Length: 144
Image (cartoon, rainbow, N blue to C red; front, side):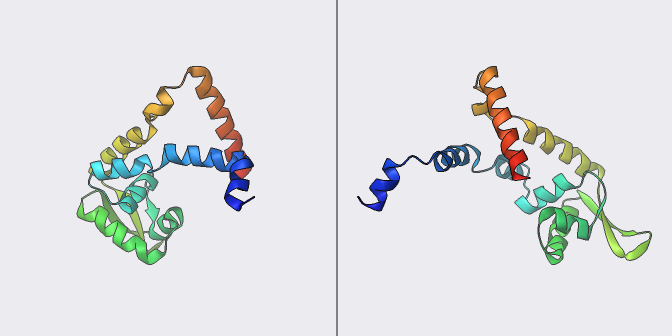
């Protein structure tokens, strides 16, 4: 029996489940929302993380990127008048990034859009949504 026939004959529910789930969530909705608001994905990510003023280092940690990358991301936010960089009072060498009023409005809007369930979730029965939610909650808990 060839490897392909063996794999086809042996059910792999984890692989099948992941294939189905990834087809539902990729491309992620944030890409469409970012494009709609003329934001780069990294800029969109920073906007989402700025629920409160954050240092450049904190932002790098939250975005899982190098500190040097955050400079360009924050530059982009400033160019769009969505955020400002301010010196931290305790140490003026450290820059704090804070959303502008325009940035706060846009953040609220995109967070509302992100919270909207996709059509495929809405189309499920209430019972199926509860089952899916419970399974996903256990998966998240198992991930740690």
